Image (cartoon, rainbow, N blue to C red; front, side):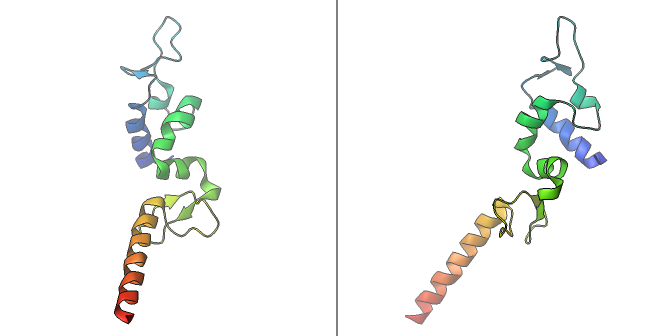
Length: 112
């Protein structure tokens, strides 16, 4: 994990439902336990992987699905494609679909 990825993971740790004042509630057995994910450069916590990390799709793709990732043609961001023909990340796909629809309608109206 690079330093930028580590910083992004640290920001996401604060949105975990088991994180409270730097401690992990799942590991708490009567004695406070530091959240492992907030101090580690690797993805150790299963709960974090399953519930929190998918909130940031590009970071999740980079860290967990390296072999399945594709690079978006428009923005250059990494994403996990839904099919083998996908060229755009979900955000850019909507923008590109709107652009192509406008272009198609414009051509159709100009031909009338």
